[in-house]
Length: 178
Image 1 (cartoon, one colour):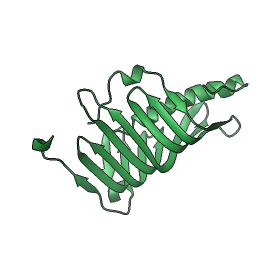
Image 2 (cartoon, one colour):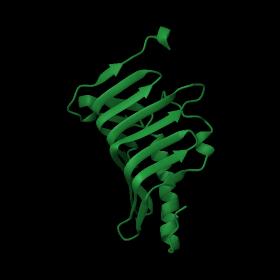
Image 3 (cartoon, helix red, strand yellow):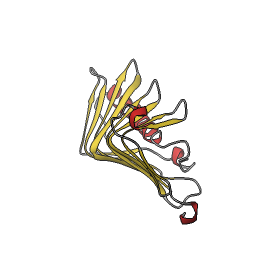
């Protein structure tokens, strides 16, 4: 574990890492229910480096960032947590691409997703997968330049409805093939 000599930095790291885990869990659509035991597992962050800046309210994990919690796993080149007034405002994950996967209750396959950039806005509970966004679940594929998930409204949007410029492409597997 990464520790800072300042207790406030360590407290922010601890709080921030928990929020990173929550952010990553929100990437999945409402149909993609995670393993119910995942939320009880510890969140682990592994990175080449971390910079905790109390003055700027940022936590930057960089270099082959791997975040896991139970069956949930995210890989990114860089994850930035932006905080103000003791709360997380925004989390940004950048990669080539950022990838995530998670096992669902009662399923033998993982939900997988990726994008070059993923942003989570804490107040609105909106997750944006930006640039080469793709989510795969049970063989079904949802792809566009932008996919948005609004957790409060349980709404997933793609393409122009999510502020993207490309059309949405969806491939749904036949139930006979599942």
